[in-house]
Length: 198
Image (cartoon, rainbow, N blue to C red):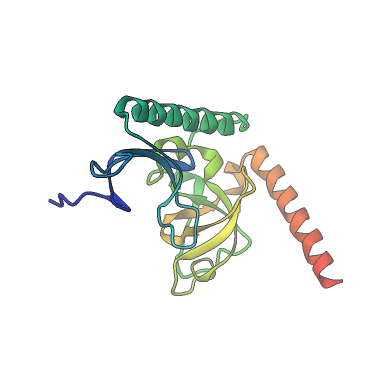
């Protein structure tokens, strides 16, 4: 068992809750002028390392805990507002909705299903699963794992791992919202390519 405390600078992390796109962190350094600090940790960087932002320090424990609770509540509200945009069935897709993934075959240009199970609870939602695979060694069936693509529901371009791909969505299981989103993304990509060729 590892008893080593997670540290942010000289502060030991006492509480943390990851909700939505940020982690809310409460840390303590009894020797510091402001022994209680609350901050966000963002992981949206090339190394996926925790990046502390918006730190507030105080000498008052209860004030720090109130800030911590307020920030958790803000993250809940932001995540709920994001999901309310998705006016469709949130039930996650499973392997039965897919053409099984053959790891050594290319999935570039295909709509794939990302496994919802390893995700945090708030992201176990159909909106975050359908991705148009566009590149990366994992997507081409190469030796790597990186799959770069665009999430159909959010339009976000990001990276996934090939081992998280359940397979290509079966055409009969692809919902209308996803078909519409795919057409929009493909149209935007075509327009971008034609601009670049000029």
